[in-house]
Image (tube, rainbow, N blue to C red; front, side, top):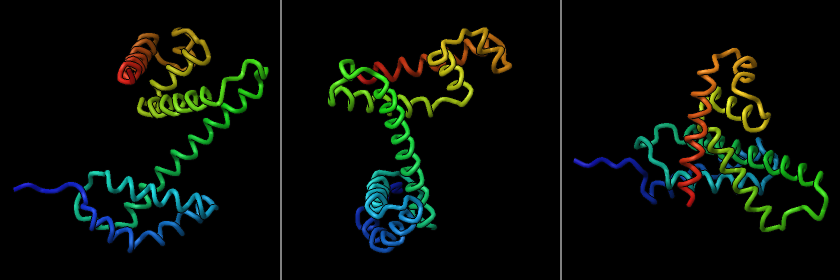
Amino acid sequence: MHTRDTLNSSEVDLLYRSHHSWLTTWLRRRVGCHANAADLAQDTFVRLLKASHAHPLKEPRAYLSSIARGLMIDQYRRRALEQAYLESLALMPPSAAPSEEQRWVILDTLERLDQLLMLLKPRVRQVFLHAQLDDMSCKTIAEHLGISRATVERDLAKAMATCYRWRYAQS
């Protein structure tokens, strides 16, 4: 006997008709903008169409709000990355600034790198960022974090291997 692990389109349609208005209102209270809330609600149902989950949904609003919360967090992180990038651009001389097309490629790459880094365990991510952004040596990172140098080297190797796999999966 074969069991399904995704909802079919008519089930999603019923969820949409039953909960879309509620979800949009729930999102609007959190993001403060009707248009942004509507976009996030729509993205939530698109994600629902693609998701695998236990069937049937016993608590559809809890499930929908969980998906929407994740999408809001992704959006906030993306905006924070964009803001940090724009602030760094403001410090550059206009002649050195990248073209609009290059800016979008850079932002897309930064967003993907951020997503990749969030897959790492917090300490591994912290070790990697200290090594890459703060130009700290393994010895200095170990002292700073209160861990052994061997642990720093292992964590750095894990992070680099993840980056390597990501880099060559993009080709």
